Length: 329
Image 1: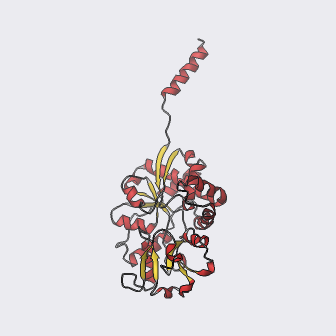
Image 2: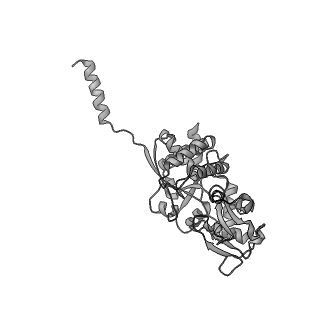
Image 3: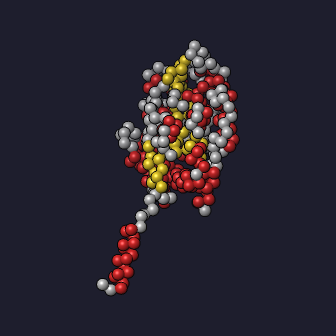
């Protein structure tokens, strides 16, 4: 064997003996099932943005019986998508959740009513039956009712119907109004045959009752580890790249979401509506840095309605998004 051949053989043996650098694993727990509400994360995975940051990301869909706060508390995720109201309530109950990024600058929560009930303004809600989601989604509703001066307790000014995650109560006239998202259930009503002129919509964001919705949260103790902060910074950087790509290529983003659906329950028409509306909520989100004023508004609403008892301390950080910005340069 020649000297060159021996050298090449030695290099090959050395390469085999050296362990490859494995990508850092990250598990993301979603708040709901795979749909355009989470397009940015699926796009980031599909387009290789996570891989570019040396991350191996597992995306776990949610569902009606899955509480992201419980999943992360039990060690089932590194980071979750959650609404701030639910996260702050969980934090006060002992789950040390911290907001590390806020991809959604605006909220999409609405109360959608049948026009034929005679409802035209918020004051008309008195005496009506209103559908409400629970599992942490009820806090904005009760805060809104309190802001209107309406008692939403049993026997109060309105009748609260515990709403499943569908629009049946409005279609079947079991409720005068139901909870909807601007990007999801509202369009389910339209796709079911109702017209915009049949509906009266009260957007929480227009009623002074808007609270921050889809943000990224992790556990406070983990943020004491610089390596974990670095991993989350790379995750946020790639995720926001996914969201910005979805804004610029909505049709492709919809197809990526469809490819990741394992239920067969979503349609391209509906996901297209969703993507168009979601892009309005994420527009201008940059690297996902939380707006302190929006955070404070959420806290003020929750404390004023006694949904949380005390002003939270350390419930958000900009350390991750700052590092993500630095990585981008």
